[in-house]
Length: 139
Ligand code: ATP
Ligand code: MG
Image (cartoon, rainbow, N blue to C red; front, side, top):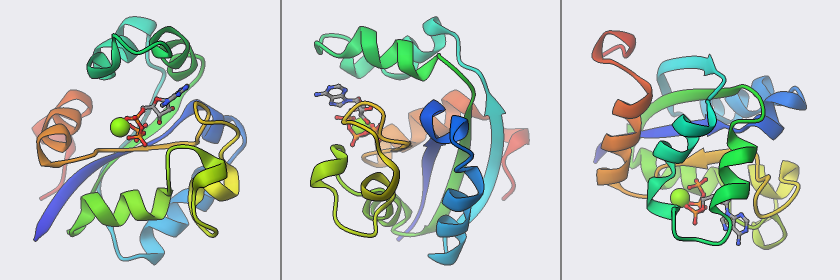
């Protein structure tokens, strides 16, 4: 199934000059970039993006981290794009992520894990619309 998903290169990835490395992996795996921009989220914007996690103990720390510096957000598309991108990222915790995945190669901790990916079709629809207007995404 053709899908769209939201990918984010998190502040730890941008700060360590990993944008090109990560985009290279995305393109090498056949995903298409349909929209892309760099943005420095405010704390409030990070809280709204991660609202599903607001009751979790790491919510404050996570939203501080996500607003500490710029991120690169992208809409990726392709066959099974949601799972393809999650497989490329690897498990949330870098020490549990499979060899060769982005989080295993670059993640610093379960929080500072370098990339984000939508976890399903409903969240992908919410997250892509949160970051991009229709005019910012190619067809
Ligand atoms: P993401 O949504 O960022 O793609 P994910 O779906 O693998 O990651 P979630 O459970 O949705 O993981 O958690 C969202 C983010 O919150 C994680 O990517 C990570 O940055 C942070 N996080 C998750 N669990 C913890 C934890 N136990 N302690 C600190 N931060 C955490
Ligand atoms: Mg998630």
